[in-house]
Amino acid sequence: MPEANTPVPTVEGTALAHTDNQGFRTTLDVAGHALVADEPVAVGGTDEGPSPYGLLSASLAACTAMTLHSYAKMKRLAVRGIRVSVRHEKVHETDCENCEQDAGAKVDRLERTITIEGDLADDVRARMMQIADRCPVHRTLAAGVRIVTHAG
Image (cartoon, rainbow, N blue to C red):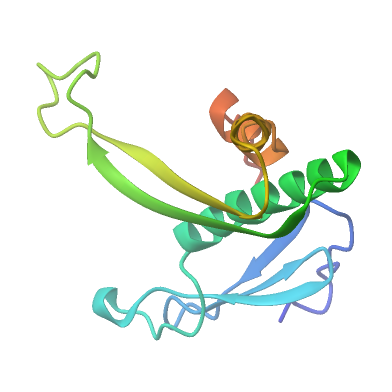
């Protein structure tokens, strides 16, 4: 996967992507965990792994589920299971700032559906939905991200 002189990342929050430049299939090392990313066949990939946007959706879904699990455990709630579905899409934003200049303006949208299994009162369910917005990945995405790129 990585070249001989490329260190394998083992620090949480670190990822290394490598492609042989023959197609979209890309091997990933995420803090010592091996994954594969790819694109669907319809766009020229081999569909051997999730797309980059699929991985982004998975990050939000996993973080939301983990955050809700932690909250339910801390509060000793009768939660049997938590399912979080996240779908990424590009949508036209009708109230965008510069629609006059860019009539085809689209924004990224992550649509999240949360199912909490268990015998919970409506107010507890409502509170858990509020807690979902406190997941660290949600906060990062909502706040915006600064990307700094260096040549290697």
